[in-house]
Every structure is written in C-alpha cells, then in structure tokens.
Image 1 (cartoon, helix red, strand yellow):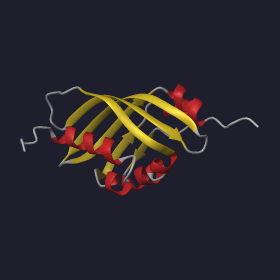
Image 2: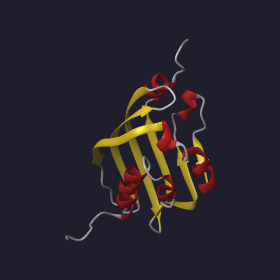
Image 3: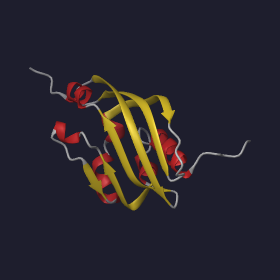
Length: 140
C-alpha cells in the first residue's frame, strides 16, 4: 500500500465527509474540545451560524444522520495550499430531508483547520436557497 501523502487537514476533511452521514459519534471525535464551527450564511435561514466547543457542536449535529437521509458527497475538488493544517475543498452534497421528504442538493465550500490532527476550526459556505426549499413546511 502506498504511503498516505495527504496532509493532516486533508485526512480530517476526508473523514468528515465519510462520517457525518453515518457515525456522528466518530465524527465528533474529529474535533478538538475547543473547536469552532461556522456557517456564514446560516443567518439567512434564521439559524445560528457559530458553534464553539464540542458540546455545542454535538448538540447541533447529533440529528444530522436522521435529518439528511442518504447524504452523499460527490465531485470533491481539493485545493491544496502551503499549510498542511488547512484544507479547502468544494463538494456537492445530496440527501432527502426527513421531515419534509424533499430532495436536497447543495454545493459547498469547506475550510478545515487542524491542530494536533483534530479539527480546530471548520467553516462551511453554502447557498441558503436550496435549504429553504428542502426544509420548508409542506402547505396543508
């Protein structure tokens, strides 16, 4: 088997994409206790956009596998930089939103910062429009 030449941040990003849809407890282990997660466009949905510390991150993400059914990521494009502790990627995500049964398709830009092999800061950019459509209450 060839040696793993990915940076620590690339490994964390790959594990993030692999685990978030299926094993939230192992996914949480990727994060430092004092990690920060940011969604700069979440305010457009009236949602919080910043979570500080593993307990806050866990509280927000624990329902992800049940809410985003069949979540898969495709078209991963990594953008290597000079710092092995930072990974930047573009990726497409698709799932069915459990509460509404609607299909969700989203393009993301993800920035992962690591410290000692764990994610210390995660920032995710996405378009609020597909989220609004997928999560909207079905009119009676």
